[in-house]
Image (tube, rainbow, N blue to C red; front, side, top):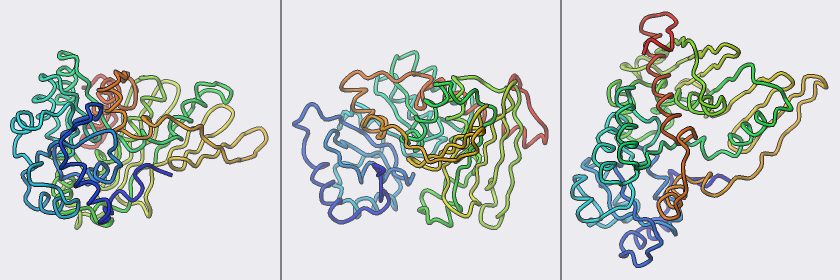
Amino acid sequence: MKIFKGLFLGSLLSGFFLSSTLAQSSQDKTKLKLGIIGLVHDHVHWIFNRDNHDLEVVGIVETNPAAIKKFKERYQIDDALFFSSYEDLMREAKPETVSAFNETAEHLDVASFFLPKNIPVMVEKPLATSYADAQEMVRLSEKHQTPLLVNYETSWYESTYETKALIEDGALGKPKKLVFNTGHMGPVEIGCSPEFLAWLTDPVLNGGGAVTDFGCYGANISTWLLEGRTPERVTAVLKQTKPSIYPKVDDDTTIILDYDDLQVVIQASWNWTHHRKDMEVYLDKASIYALDATRMRILEYDSGKEQTHEPQSIETYQKDPFRLLVEMVKQGRKVDSHSLYGTSNNLTVVKLLELAKRSADLERTVEWTEL
């Protein structure tokens, strides 16, 4: 069962539980004091629907009246938990770390304020809307020796880790092609909030449409599976299949990453018939199909048999990004920069996405060295 099952529902009971958790002053020093930056990303419901036995939300920075009203009513949040600025949050709430659920274009502002104060930052994917912003965020993290993490849903998947383990084992041979299918029917179609849609469908605030929203998943996982290797060339097509709904951004994107010995295909779309976060890995001797967080199949070429494959269980901190934050701050757990959450990986992700957008604009393949 996925940890964040029912993440958008927020029942009355969970609201009362959250209210009591937020309202109490933190007597337990082992609890992580977490600041929330923004309520305009619908993923923020994850933290409010979580059993926060190991952390306390000590403050929320948000100025959008509609978002504030909605979250106050849904989760019974006290007025004292809301702040209008980063400065007020730091002075009054003194968070030990912050998690950003604001516009992707504002991630650099979050990093620029908190990292110099040695406050670890976790942002929702992707790291930034531009390679220049991403570089500056990583520079700040390294200069101040303060962690900067990027959260993806697929980083919680047992199938993601199992796929890497199967590749590293070597029994199935070397990868020849990786295919990632990510997305859904569209943010409007699935009922995303007006506050989320206002920036998710904006080419500046989100850096694009489906290319940014879902292209980052395949870029993140493929970079990790390939041990940080970068492609020689990038080719992309960005389409508007529903311009009446998404007039400013792409809603269907295909990206091809060309390596010297393999190819990665990323199909990111707001035009699927169903929700998708799956991948296919084609190796010398078999194919691995990761259908979702836990369901997997393996097709062996010699026998022609396709069998279900049960992924190994993973640690709690691997299944829960907020538990990772707790263990990182409270217990000194290290996060490798090449990991799914890490800065080196996610700097590559943003460069890949920027090259993909350049390829689409120029209507040609672009070289890795062009950026």
